Length: 144
Figure (cartoon, rainbow, N blue to C red):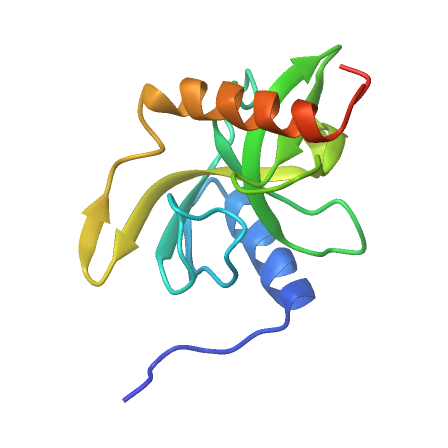
């Protein structure tokens, strides 16, 4: 029996923004494969509000950059108070974004009822650097 509610991407982004704006966590089921192997389609993600300092290198963030679309990708660089974001298995960057489009950061991952810790701990910085380096090799001169 499925007890979940199915929402459009835009509705999910709006609900998440409202919930995080009340300083509460938000949980939802991830869809897609852009963050494999660390996050898989069907995983339950817990999103926490950002700290006052904003996201850090390696944080996996939920952001809404275009018409309330919801994307969950990793911060792979920071430059002049803008955050370079990319999927872990991408061949290109999503782009540089100001903090106001970043809704929150992934604070937890559950897969089949078990907590997954890999990808969110100290190793997140190494993952971010490897992702950025791999992307740079394929996209010569990403202006970073």
